[in-house]
Length: 333
Figure 1 (cartoon, one colour):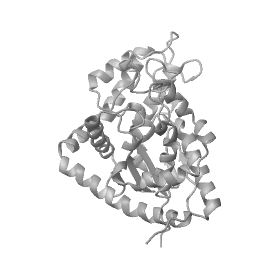
Figure 2: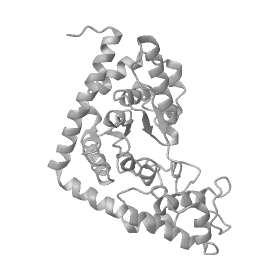
Figure 3: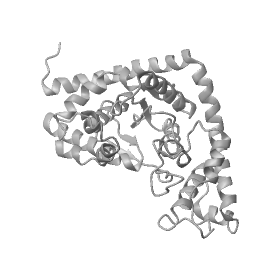
Figure 4: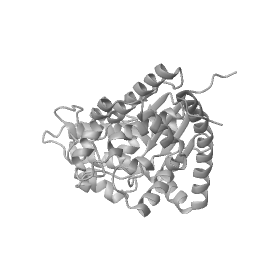
């Protein structure tokens, strides 16, 4: 008899089209885990509320995010795919976990500090406590691993600390989750300020590539990418952050190592290299874009996948939540 598969959970916010950074750091890797792990992938629409949303747009983007996950290769026959707000146990568990999280722990979260400075007019309680909801997302399914970018590692470590604290107080209940960070391309940087992470909230649209960008737009953005003046394609993050970022992208798109890339473009200059990087991205994203458009056009199929995923997720989540409620002393019938 085969041992049960370890479980993977990850979620992505429906805050507009995914960037190339989202694809390389997260979405591209998720389908690769489906055969080895029991995978659960979630569109975390409740997390999106920490920033004021236009309701109709949030609904639309939630469907688009789910469609992009499926288009990227996630198979609903192998993995659970659903929208977070369709499974109320996420927020129910979050309350119990918030009573086992310390104020000081949440105050030390670097993303809270970062988002507070960017949204000084709306520093809401959800912005402060959303790492607890993220912990609930993970722990509700007793996930062993959480695929994240390096900037989210701190949140998985917090989930682990909360799980450990709960287990110590109420007996063994939760698996202690671990971050799963890809070795290459975990952090894709801005094309205009290569010392900053690529983000679609950047005021300069040339700084990021969206998964839905046309081939022409992708080519123009890479051709205008900031590099340096020495004209040598060489991996050196400290002294050549722009070229190193482009090499990281090209490496993921083509599977080539940095030494091989350096030899390929030896003496060819940056123009040739930028064009090659752009073409590798265009070729990789084209079939994903085609499938994305097909799925979005078939709303009954998309809604069917999400409904089925939510029903299965609620069944699993309810078993764990009932156990937690019993352990903390809630009266149950």
